[in-house]
Each structure stands twice: as structure tokens, then as C-alpha cells.
Image (cartoon, rainbow, N blue to C red; front, side, top):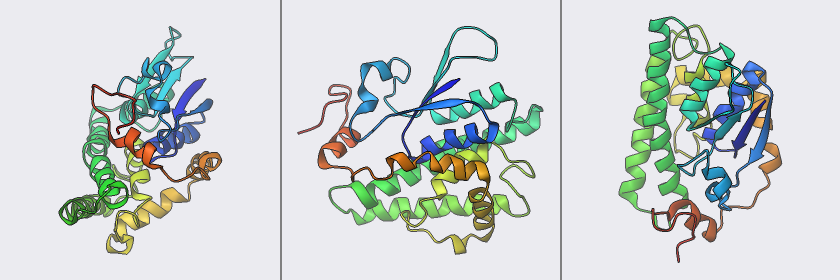
Length: 236
């Protein structure tokens, strides 16, 4: 059984998408990031970067002691190796999947995240910052669109953890001030993943949290006001 520490963000959705595809049994433990759950001492024991998602695998493949994993990309690799699915075993295929997984982790996710921050959450609208991240998000959409030309999925004919990592960061394309019609191959790929039964089930896991209130000013201080000196404490 996998214990998944989760909140319905793009990084959280990556993991439910994998678990639903692979059919691994799991339980969700909500981590309300705007309420500061990610700073609780019991969570920090296995997620020291005070970020979700994180997992606890109570039945590791080797039959040994419980394994904990944080960081969504690392979790996807761990689960793919546990399940023997969605990560090729051959050297070249594995390398390509990992290239695109790290592309998402180092590029699409952080840049789209800053897009969200300066467009939605920042207390003042800074035109340069908004343009910077909207434009970089647009560039990355273009990279993915070109990659998908002539391919069903990012690395070819087979669905992989690279697709699961990238898809949730395209879901909020309107919020990112992008237009999917500008990227026809990306749009085709996006629609094919959106319709997968496992994707539908994964996003249904978010429904119990869909009526949560908007992030409060106190919540913003928790999310965006942290330093090493005040970890978990709202900023005045």
C-alpha cells in the first residue's frame, strides 16, 4: 500500500495519474498547503523540503523496510521501477524518458509556476515579470509541440512518466495565458491524455478538495513568505 501525501496541484496530479494507470493500491492523506500542513513536523520527517507530494511505500519491491520518497519526479521514477511500467528498461529508451522528465522538472514546472505566481498571487502586478514567464511558458509549449510532431507521446508510441509529468502543467493553459490552438501537436497529445480513463479517475481524486476557499492572505504568507529562519510561520 502506498500512502500518498497530496494536494490537487499539478505536482500532486502527476502521482495520482501514475497510481491510477498502474493500478497500485494507495490512500490519500491531504496536505493543505495554504493551511501550512506541509510544515508539520510529522510531514517534514519524510519531506524535508516542506513540499508535497510525498509517498510512503509500506510494501517495497524488495520486501524490506518502508521507503519514503519526496519530489514528484523522484516519486514517478520510484513508482515506475516498483511497478515495472511507464519507464523503459532499455538504456536508450530509459534515457529519453528521463531527459523529458527532467525537462519538465527543471523547465516547464518552474516556469509555469512563476507564471501562476506573478499573474495570480503576487500582491502587485509587475508587467516585466508577467511577460517574462508568460513568454517562457510559451517557448516551452513550443518545444513540446515540436517534440510531439509525428509522435503519439513525448518519447514515441508508448505512454510514459514523462507524459504524466508534463500533462498537469498544461491543464491550466488558460491561466498561463496560452492558446492550445497555437500548438496543434501538443493539443492532440493533451486531448488524448485528458480522455484516458486513468486520467479521469486521477482528477476525480481532487473533487473532495474542489470547494476549498481561495487562498487567503494568511495562506499566501505561508506559501510565499518562507525563509530558513521562519519556516512554517506566516510573515507579518
